[in-house]
Length: 183
Image (cartoon, rainbow, N blue to C red; front, side):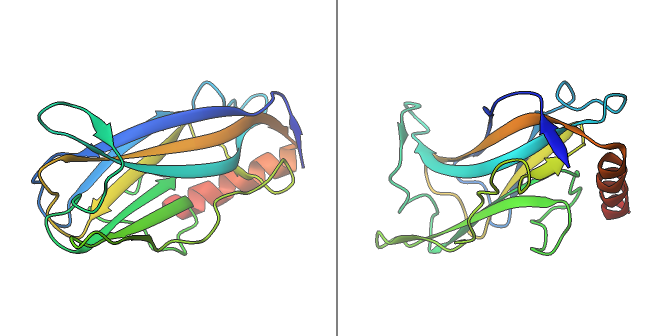
């Protein structure tokens, strides 16, 4: 299906929810992958692994920590998703959306209990199992169910990827699937 043109490398993007941001807010970021994807050469981006890293940033000092129990002003949840088409909505995508690459969710409790609720592994493997994207941008979104606490809430997505060359048939199949998902 695909042949590797590079070894694995990492792409990262961080989105931030400002302190005291209202419930059900959505923030997003983009990762420019245009330099990795080439239509003429049938070149795509093979995504092997996606990690989400949750942190708090002290709004006054800018110091980063991982104490997430007070991330929200009351008990609630935080979700993050990586997709290869612009969701263009004010909420997270459904889990069966074709453009969804990876997702993560975190439940916080002001009593100090934090649990991860999205246990689906976002490790796809090497070339024959990797999620291949032929779009020139990836979209990273984060949503909260309750008011953000007194500090900024950060989520960083780390993407392990490689550039691959696809056969003409495989390139067309992925491009058609992406176009169909866009409609």
